[in-house]
Length: 178
Image 1 (cartoon, one colour):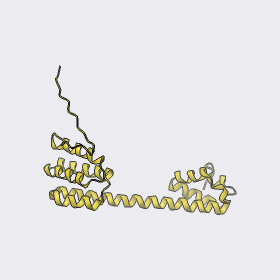
Image 2: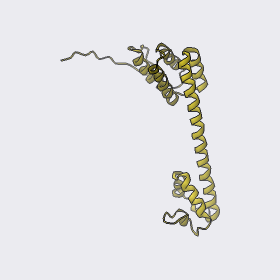
Image 3: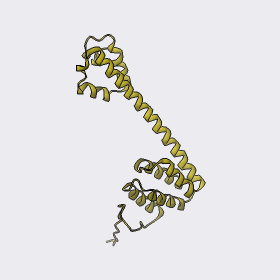
Image 4: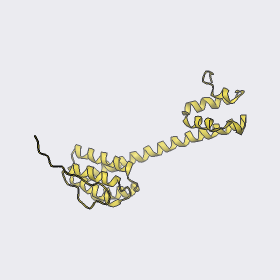
């Protein structure tokens, strides 16, 4: 029978013990601790110092990319602050990886925000058109939920149907063609 020692790690922000093990294990533990303290710049600095200790090979750069994406999704720190820490602590290749990911995530966020804004605009316009055509009383919670859950294509179809629909049910009738 194998004889294993069990070691427990405390990942809470209040823990005063160092995380032990290989660099990869310390990185994982530090990420978990940082997630529990999402506004701590010191946690980000600790993680980047560990990333600095990794080599500059492809596997290490993958670690950098994975951890940066994780931090971007869990930490509540300005991107510029994280990029400044990367600038000061990481090698050129790791820093370039972080900067490229930061640009991609920023661009993706802008695109998603733009799409959400367009969808919200479509929903509001259709809601106003329905109220104008059939009266405010038709905009009950079910209609509003239906508008929020609809795809952009479905909203376009309903907007076209408003032009010749006799009732609000005609607008949403799925057996009807546009």
